[in-house]
Length: 73
Image (cartoon, rainbow, N blue to C red; front, side, top):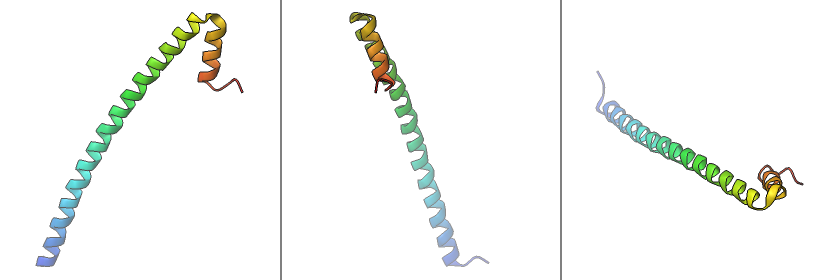
């Protein structure tokens, strides 16, 4: 037979489990959204760097490339 104390502890752990699952789901959604945003920003940054490089000629494009990949120093 399960005591009242054990039953209360089981109920507490089940509630905690539900809270953890909700928190994990929320964090996974935030992580996914952050990944999408990071990709979009990276695409935008690459396009802006390429546009800036083309407007400044090939030397500007090379400079953008080197700056972007931290290879110039």
